Length: 338
Image 1: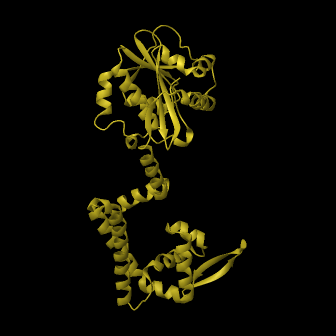
Image 2: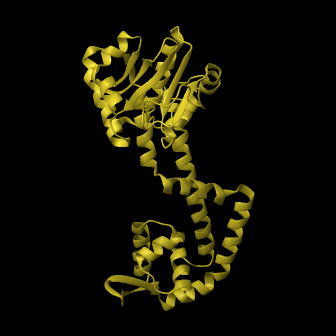
Image 3: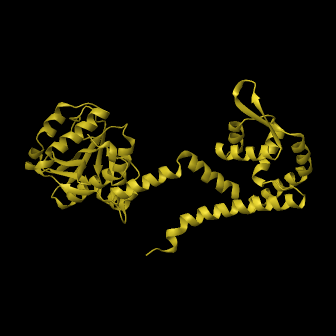
């Protein structure tokens, strides 16, 4: 069953179109009163040619902020009406330039007062509603990332909601190694300690560790581990998400699953070690309750690690809040700790 909110995006698009149509209709109504039967959408081209001289389609489109096909269509309309002339570009005979015809020059003289008052009327409307600021913000956002890209991202995030976090099974042992080697080779290099830990994941379990996997569409796409370094603390480590699934919030799901597991175990602390250039990863860890601290007990066993972070339960409660762990709330790509 649909609700009115389901149609809100389409109502926004329809409303923008209605506002645009209303503005053009207003201009055309005034033009008709002056005996001019010209589509209002063509007027900016005429005034631009008057002020800038001969221009090609690409230049017109760029300065008007409209698409090349739309400007090409309007220019052909003006050519048919005898209001513009077409000539080859002296610098490039393949390009065509448009200029005003004598008829258009005379027409614009008649329309000049209307054009000036149109600008004043639009300025008045804008001052009342802040229209240009809002539209400019939307236009700028779409220039940075178009609507199709935004839809694809939302679809990917919805897909991530289907990811299931599962515990270690022997059949996943090769995936644990594959995912971590994939990440290590991309960001750093494989160290001797990595080879030991990744070659025998079941050994990590025998000494009190835990390994988690993210399964999506029947495939293992991510992993992380809790390593039992001593009798008191656990290390969050060996986390990796396959590149094709990064950005879906799967890293956050893995981290939160590990934290939830930690809360069920009789351990006093949880920490991780990572690298200072992995900014998205550090932001993720801070968002779930990890805080930077000085590393106790000497240098790290990982050559790449220069950041030590300890988990604080109170910070986790404050930061995770209601609904934490949902993939559609994760905005960072979880690059793993060492």
